Image (cartoon, rainbow, N blue to C red; front, side):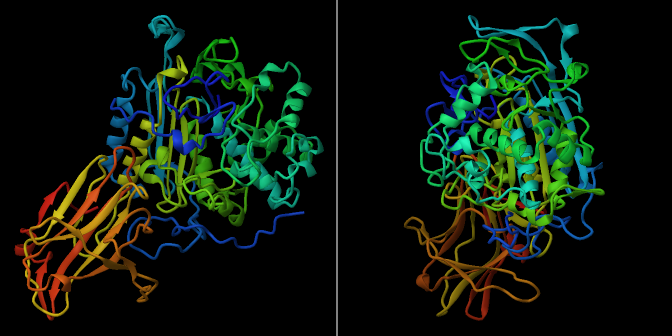
Length: 633
């Protein structure tokens, strides 16, 4: 299995769900299956492409009010191209408390959540800039010898044969392998040997069978080819037979008409790469990525000597697995990749958390790490640019998924990039804050049906997002909504009676919520219920420049605001002469959250008179807060 099951534990062998989110005969968008159970416990001309909601460049001050949204490519530039070293949270520009909570949240899923542990163990790595502030193993790398399907229990190895997780434990990355194949393809695009808009059949003539003649390289990289999620290539004993299955495969939709996540896209891309370079994929990975970057624990088909340091995966037997292999440990878990000799475009790469952090840092640096450059900044920018603007919710760069709250949690921004793997792995990069998170778990150990959804990934990403401080726009503190799900938090001003012809509310506002699901609303009441108050916002531009105010006629904001402070103004003249209460109401659903909302410098001006000012101690003491807290970060 290469992807991450997002349909509440259905099997993944062609009898149910295979790969990351859909059955063999369908293509279910990954985001629809991400909920699970949130339990406790010629060449492409590299000319500028319009960036979809581009984020500010990362750096030590990213995430704090420092400039408008939509500027910069999001990767480090100039001298800010650090290499990794261990350091404190403070050195990384992170808060220690949320990082400690990140570990506690991850450890909760070592227990039943809700019926079984989500994973036997995991390795957690989090950092910002060039500092790795957290690198922690939890649980066991090898715990179970087998799975007892009659009792739905794991058969444990004797205690002296169980292996605890270590910081350098190596994992079967499953679908994170797709990122490496994608990076190799973008390298060839940059070198002029591969064209993004060329048809696949122009490189692989037999591919045109089944009506696939119009599928392009871009369709493969963005999962818009129309391929279903997978086909059982492992049932064909020969490579020729497997290729015949691929050549004869008929797409379920027209190319470019829908987003359908599919292993077949990256298998096809592998075949293109091997054709145009004359080298096998494992050699390309070694020569073009891992060797230059010094990623010594990343490869296909790890040698037998690595086995004691590799996390075990599944007791693979029918009916839940397509092959009868027993405990899979040190070999690729995915059946199709296994049948392809362990080297496949969609699965098969093994790696450790530190190596993945080096890759993350390389991409956040704009393609360079130390003296090694694997991609140009322009090429890296394509990884963080949404090519799937026609499919909201399925944002995708070249190979990388973007803005996916279902596993990125509050780290999700329009430029946050990452991927998950069916075995329990995930990687998230946030150029906005220059942060990176690696969660490597063995969640199919002993069997894939024990876990559902992405709750540990979301929980850890939420805490890393919270660890990035947000400096108040003025003063030492601002009101913070918190980041709890399934919550309504209110921040209420004392009663006011505006009398002038132009009373108005002014404040500083910062928000980042799950788009469309969580919202921040300004409301007014005269004792007969609450109604929304329309307002305008303006983010501070470069220097003294401030963009034109943006109207919010519904009195609410939701989604991405650039993670910068905005100045808000609301006209209160409709309530002239009335006793008026004003409040902010922050509401979240039960699934995912963003970084939350901050409100500061609250003032109500009644003509030339300031009748309320939150910076005056007497006025500040009259604010009623339910769920909101004063925060310095």
